[in-house]
Amino acid sequence: MTTEILMFGGLFVGYFLMHGAYPEMFAEGASHLSWQLGATNTVVLIVSSWTMALSIHFIQVGKNSKATWTLITTLACGGIFMIIKAIEYKSKFDHGLLPGKFFSAEHFEHANLAMYYGFYFCMTGLHGAHVLIGMSLIAWVLIRHLRGDFNPHYFTAVEGVGIFWHIVDLVWIFLFPLLYLVG
Amino acid sequence: MAQNKEHSEHHVIPFKILSNVMIGLLVLTVLTVVTAKGIHLGVLAAPVAFLIAFVKAMMVMMYFMGLKYDTRGNQVIFATGFIFLAVLFFTCAFDIWTRIQVQSTL
Image 1 (tube, each protein chain N blue to C red):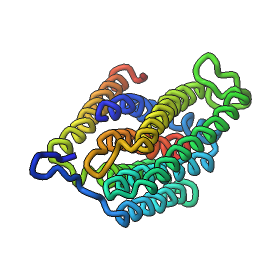
Image 2 (tube, helix red, strand yellow):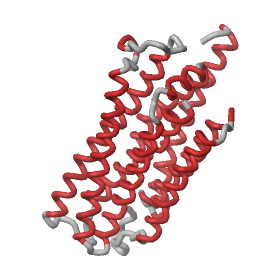
Image 3 (spheres, rainbow over the protein chains, first blue to last red):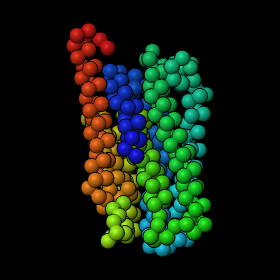
Image 4 (cartoon, chains in turn green, yellow):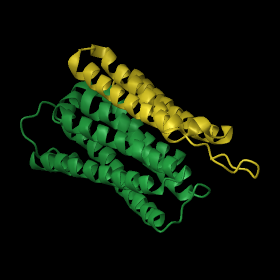
């Protein structure tokens, strides 16, 4: 999990340095994003992190049916996050707001605006991939939970998947203000 | 994740603490939006947003991930990741800063 921090960390360092070099360009890039959708996704992920932590809590205290529902809610929140993300991506594709040579938008102020979208798609894309992997892992522990594999003395898999899911939340906590608000 | 033969039971984080942390995270999210969109902080906008994100990240790590109740070893391993991230950031920032000093451009 620590290596996950370093993987995203490289992108964050790149973001900070280039943001320092071209602050106005980054502000223009952020102005094209919907902070309302970003904020909604932040709330969705925070709730999903809470339900994930609760799943472990309920398994620890032997409330298996509650744990089933919190795991399902976590999975559903991951799905909602990806749907909102898809709506955002669709809007960027339609407006040609894409990285590098794929950039084809018109009416923009800064010539190197494509760089902002390079960061946007790399960071949110890598994060989105983590959400999908996390959802697959949650589906796996949910199936094992329904099969009765976990009990108050053994729940290591749920705990491990939980930590992965919290990393997904953790990264988004930084991505939201950096990409959508401050820009 | 502390586990040994004498204390094989994990620490159960109470429902109330987990729920309070979740509410705290939502309140801080509102605060992030208000400070960024509602009031114009100028140059302070980025540091304030980053500071709030840092507090939120600590809450997630300490309570949701349970690092607060974890062994010192795991806490150190986690902290090491952030220390190396800081090393990466400062060496890169120093590289760019000195480059600008010498060449007047990136």
